[in-house]
Length: 408
Image (cartoon, rainbow, N blue to C red; front, side, top):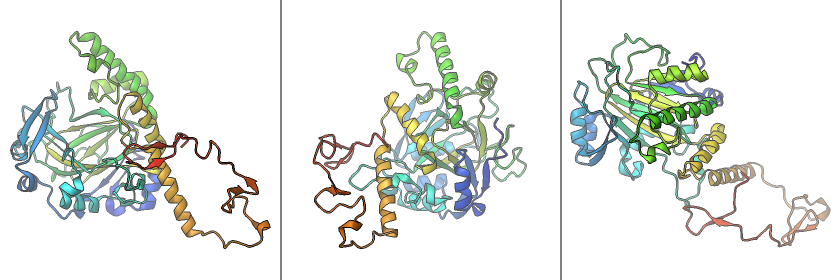
């Protein structure tokens, strides 16, 4: 595994904005701990059952991907069992098709309040560029979203699946574990853990294990996973065309086992950072860092996506890859950047207002306009450049028009 000495792992009490900014520019994942200390509600099965128990959900089988419809009460009835279930079920992106703030206002307020470094990862954070789009645009749904899953049996050495397959996001993300159910192999109050401050290259007791790859390793990872996809295609005559045409990474079709990871290291000298997550741990994943997750006990997590200035180039790269994979650019990245620039420009104008106009025309700024379209004494023609019909309606903007931003 990657050397963990330089990863940021600390309690939220020891994190300042300056410390996080200095670290985040390196493009590495981070773990900020003890976040649940600031929570005002109990993120427990009892809480969910009391408020949402009769709601029907789609439970996905981690082994077969088969979807089973059930109520939240039914899902948590099995969740609270200490023994490992024959079916490893998960609820993904809950609540589906709904605004978390509207659907779960109490949980939304509590989650936003306990997030470390809210300047970056809160919905209204000043360094979260995703909030720069005006109201007339359809905003991307960046969460929060819940991920609730049963744990995999850590003694099952033949297991070939994880809870979340290998994938890559176009945004930065923060993922907080809010609850973990005690099992015969895991007790969150056990102080005899075999891992060091949440990160290690050796196995340890943890509610969830994350493998996160460096952005610079993405080309090699893509080659390797593409080779695995080709092997699978050659070995299976019944493999569907849908699977065979998947993008190696963005298709989210595989969980890399220990054997896969060893092959990857041997052939391409690529290995991930391994982070062990427990209740209260907030894991920060930079945009473009491929990652996968395996839960080893039943756990409730809540995640939120954000767009930081430090990783905007990575977001652009992954957005382009999504386009080639025929996945929708829900982030509207170019439009977001345009309005980010406009907000910065407006703020600078407020801080440094232009001096009063001087009657002496010889003192005009070279960029001064006098209402007759003269710039620095030169006529600006009403030609193609100003209105050539290339303005286009932005997706989700109603009748609002904006200029093309392909040069951003």
